[in-house]
Length: 118
Image (cartoon, rainbow, N blue to C red; front, side, top):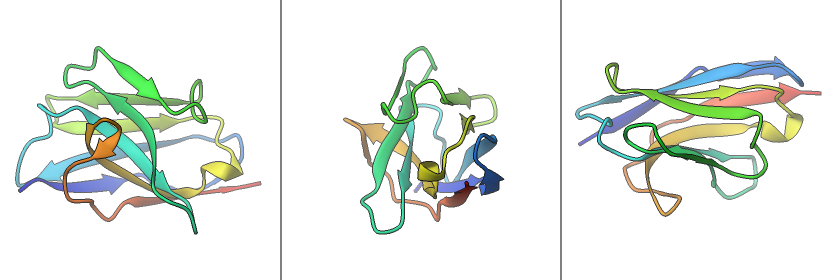
């Protein structure tokens, strides 16, 4: 069973940047369409971005387009999310997962907390 481990979150000022990483244990993620999701306090978990298994196709939620970049390195079996020009409304716990129709299909990991101060 694939276990997902997110890292790279932290506290950053508005306008700053962070790079999240997602690794796996117990299996590989390199053959999955992978994505990032986030859950803000008191809100439902929402889709952020996905990338095809070879990286040739990407899509983003409108709220992060032009600021976030999803990428993957299949030689390292790792998924990334580069987040630039962060806004306070980006504050959330961020999760990675395999994606089908913008829904996560593997067991969720612990996530990584991102806090953006104004």
